[in-house]
Length: 450
Image (cartoon, rainbow, N blue to C red; front, top):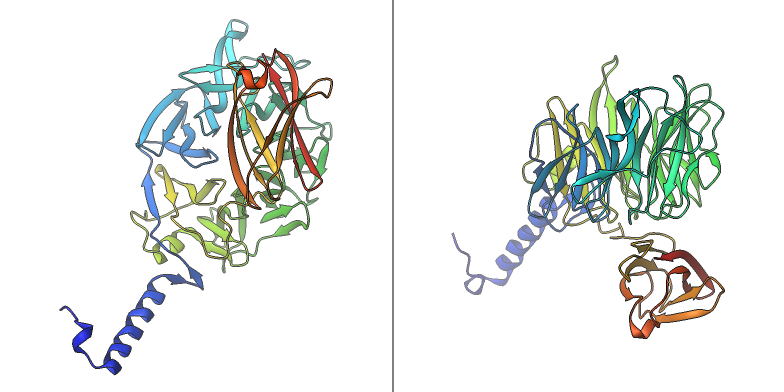
């Protein structure tokens, strides 16, 4: 039936409009959360997939296929590929994966042992052995778990003997660095997007949640792990004392109020605007039932599947056990079920109106590739001030380039600079420093030109 409002009395028109508006409000609101579009759930192709890592933009997903190595999935185009190796855990926006593989160049008694490395452009490679840590078997050595946004840093764990492990970081400039612990085992499970902060656990009387910046910092004395860090280390999430926690540099550690009826929770991903995903458990006896959650600042923790259904999402699976990661802007989530092993990419076309789309909370930027080998570098960042300036100086402090960036406050920017152009005086190989300067603030990144 088609209504022609021109033929209705004004009172009836008003009644009909009220009904339509009320229907819209009911359909598009859930627990006071206003949304603008339907979420979409995409099942990652293949069988046996467990998605562990999502790239900053949400376009790439990586993970492990049981004992069959790793996989790499690109959301745009629905492109899925197996990549071999032993395990794959995290990925950049250029599809560079960090994980563990076997390399015939590194053997113990003639047998290749697991070693941390990267998958890129169809091949696995490794920075090599960790100085001071000698392989002692053919089944255990180093494992890569986290990668920075530009792919220049990673974190992981290495076995130092048959009973204990060390946490480590690595970057293209300084190489490997063994992180401080309590002279027992430790594991670095995640690293901030800019590579400045690592997180994981250190063994004390139990596993304790630690982060390194660069020294070790205890988050909670009652047991737990750090599982994810935002771009610049301002936010981190994980589990402590059986609860999901959220820690920011201003307010410290806070436990997330769990879904009603939950007996525990663990956080696995955090966006730069503070949206958190993870899992919570219910039940009186093990094995507990696991359920994925999403947490919105100022709103609280929600069952992820229930939230998707309330927003009329397409292709919602019968269960979602764990939400294992989230993109920087909070709009793309990876989730999985373990029986059978299945992974999903969830795209939220909108966030609750109170949530910023992408707020890094502190001024920052990244430079890649670094070292610069082709002459061109790409700079991505965010300024909390109006119209910052980017200056490039050489190792002696001499300014070689100055760029005024026309930005509104709290805006993102992306720049491409050709270091070999005439405008830049054909910068020779060497060490340079890039500084973002605005309203008295200065943030500097080291750049190596090959």
